[in-house]
Each structure stands twice: as C-alpha cells, then as structure tokens.
Amino acid sequence: MPVVRAVAAERFPARRAAGRGPGWCRGDCHVHTVLSHGADLAPGQLAVAARALGLDFVATTEHNTSAGHGAWGPYAGDDLLVILGQEVTTRTGHWLALGLDPGHQVDWAYGVRDDVIDRHLAQVRRPGGLCVAAHPYAPYPSGVLGYPYRWFDAIEVWNGQWSSDLPWNADNEAALAEWGRNLAYDVHEGRWWPAVGNSDAHLAGQLGTPHTVVFAEELSTDAVLAGLRAGRSWIAGSAAVGLELTGSAADRVAGIGERLDSGGEPVTVRVQVSGVPSGAVSLHTEHGVVHRERLPAGGAGSVEWRTTARDSGFVRVEVRHPDRQMAALTNPVILA
Ligand SMILES: [Zn+2]
Ligand SMILES: [Zn+2]
Image 1 (cartoon, rainbow, N blue to C red):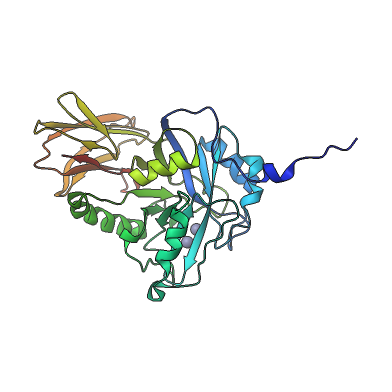
Image 2 (tube, rainbow, N blue to C red):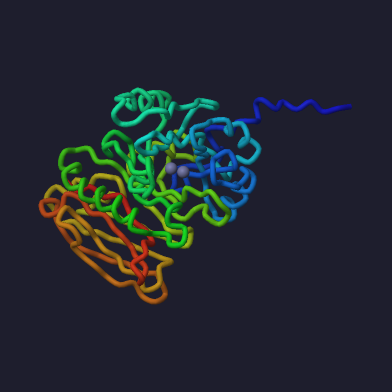
C-alpha cells in the first residue's frame, strides 16, 4: 500500500528545536545555496557541514527570494535550528531579514534615495524578525551599505565571503572601526547596536567562518534572535575558539551584552580564551585600547583588568592571531 506523506507540514523547519534549555549556541546567519548567484551548495550539504562544525543553528538567506524555505524542513532537527530568512540586495547595500514566516518575501528593488526601506524593515520586525546590515564595506557596486547602521537591529561587522582567502580583511576592519567608534556615544545614549559575524557561505568549506555565539533561552528562532538583538553574543573565527567575558563588582556579575550596576564599586573584567595559540587579547572602552595581553603558545589563557564605571562606560574584547587576523570579538559588557 502506498504511504501518503504529509509533505506540506514537513517542508518548513519548525521555529523551535525541542529539548534545549538556556545556554550559549553557535550559528551562522548568512548562508547561500544554489538558489543564489555564485553559490553551489544544496541545503542538505550545508546541514551536514553545520552539524560537522558543531553549529546549533543556521539561517537560510538567499538573494531576494524565499523560494528555498520549503527545502529545509527535512534537514532541521532538535540538534540544528534552521532560521528562515532572506538577503535583501538593494541598490545601495545588502541587509539580512531573519525570522521570516515561511514564504515571506521581502522587496529589494530600491535604494537609499527612495525612502522606502523603513517600510520593509518594519514588515520584517512585525512578526519578531531581525534586520541585519550585511557586509557594510563590501568592495563592489551596491555591496557598500548606503544606509546608517542605526536603521538596523544588528551590524555584520565580520563577513567571511569577500575575504575567503583570509578570514579577516580590510573591509571587515573598516566595518569594525565604524561600529567600535559609534559604541562610545551609543552606549552613553542608552541604545547601542550589536555586532554579528557570518560566513556568507557560497561554496564548500566556507560555512562557519566566522559565526556568532549567542546566549539564548532555548534553541528557537525567537530566542536566538532575542539574544542577537540584545547583543548577548560574540563572534568566533572558528568553532575551535572559545571565549568568556564578564564584568563584576562586589557580588554582582554581568556578561556580554548585559549591564553591570557597579554601585560605584571597582569593576573587575575577566576574559577567558581558548583555541588561539600566542593570540593577542585586547580590551576596548570609549578610550580605545586600554589593555593588551598575549596568550600562551597553548592558546588558552585568562586576562584580568580593573576599572570603574566612571572610567569606562563599557568594555569589549578582540582576540587576534599573531598575524593580526581576527580570532574572536565580543559585544560590550555595559558598566554603570
Ligand atoms: Zn550580500
Ligand atoms: Zn550573502
């Protein structure tokens, strides 16, 4: 007797993967398949690669189409959340729409002078979606972001695609510099824009370089996007890199993306890194680089630094390999 499968219900991945409570999870929110120009991967290949790398989630972001959403259902599971999205390649910059409803297609045919992007951003945010400014300094026509960072919810300061020979290049350095410079005033004003990193994978071997490690209440689209929106995240150059950052004052502790109310007490900043042999850890505040330390040849080490909320409104961390290639960078811990 032929088996009739309930195909429609299984085509789209669930918004929630069961059985995972609060914790840090790793994922890549900018990924292309054969539906995008220049990409040659099938969803199944990407899912195999994601699991092999130990990623907990990926977001599917084809250029200007949601036609591929229905292909991902069979590859998602309780160990791999698939977030539905789209890369919107407008005439003056690209952005990622993450957390779309199945089949929701976002309009892309406009530029900054058309004054319509806010309408499209609002459409994505309404059902709980996240809008990410993609590769702001990509060196090709329409790749450079012509919109201000503050119109989006997060900034992709590290994009792997246009530097596939080197995981970190001048375009990423420029995106990071603008983001880092804005932080000083944005934190002071009470609203800052989180950094994220994605591979923008088009070809085999690119997935996960880099990816974002985010604190989520559970492994679900809404919880992962909430973590990214709050900046409770850091960017890893590879799955081999581990990092923890906290600020503490008296008996209070705050992590990445959180606010430490120091009550005027001295603040101790602690960083723990693994997987970056002889790497350089640097701490950054509104004063720029305030502390530097070298990791041992084994690649694992910790750094401690003291400050006060009066001296430093926030602290964030970069970890670089000896050749200055980025290994990890964090969103700030806010000090108050
Ligand atoms: Zn793009
Ligand atoms: Zn892309």
